[in-house]
Amino acid sequence: MPKYYGFKVYGYYLYFTSHCIVEAMHAHASDTKLTEAGSAKFFVKSDGETSVAERGRLNDREIAGIQAFIKLHYQEMYLRWAEMSDSGFYKGI
Image (cartoon, one colour):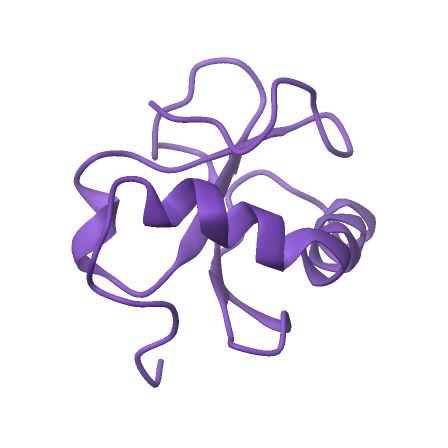
């Protein structure tokens, strides 16, 4: 599973899977297992704002912190995403 970063953000790794690249850009947040079970899912819009598709086990503070982190770093995260996907950035989700 490709991680956006090698470090945790609010206690969670931000990652995507090879199956994810057929969807609009998003990030899963998981603590250690990097599986979709129990992870949160954030769809990333073209301005860096996010919508939460799945909360997973994250509390409101963790979600808000991860959303703020993504807002600051979404452009560099997209470069990582784009290495594996040619289907685009934000497809109107």
